[in-house]
Picture 1 (cartoon, rainbow, N blue to C red):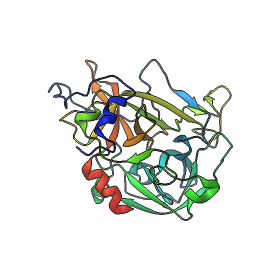
Picture 2 (cartoon, one colour):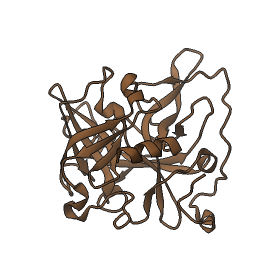
Picture 3 (cartoon, helix red, strand yellow):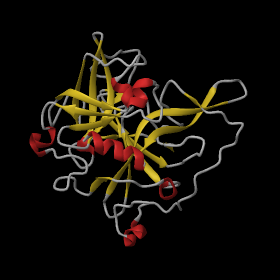
Length: 294
């Protein structure tokens, strides 16, 4: 297990839950991919308004144009020109890229405090491109921007040795993370201009998924689902690509996952009951892959 802190810092964890082992799932519980990302009632998401503060300044909203329509996703700035997100934000089920992608760090409604940047390239696992299934093991993409976003208005980026302010990208394994709370932060599509999207008054594509929301929940791992970090943080469609991190009482934060889907367990009627949401776990192999792209 590689840890980005001294052994003494283990006592400084913000949460008291003891780490647990990787679980054995009931063989009768057959997991399947769900089409939406779920709020696990009650809805406890909180809007982030201090978007210029660390680490929220590096949580990005994605403007994705495909066939003349605007789609939204989430991501995190992990380098001067590099944004980590879910691969299915970029590639459809045919493996096709969108017409264009623009990235807005710390978007807050109509406010774009650090600007808007165009994507010029994408790095994605050949495993995902061969089978572009949302919520799968390699559902991650590294976007390369055409401009140094970190230099814009002294934005910096997650994990920077000079501007990262205690953030990092390092491997925390399942044995350590299990049972500890992780934070998920991104741009949910059921929020329009900071409030719930109301069909009675309608909304535009530009106002949907334009505000940042956050929640947390304990991490969980199943042997039947290797490479995934399961969590109970409330999310919604639009938050694909959201960063998942753990925070220590010292203020240090480590990126541990990228949110990609929900997980549903079929009930007696055959419909899926969502009890957890799903992130690609930034384990040893995945972190090595991301570093090779950078």
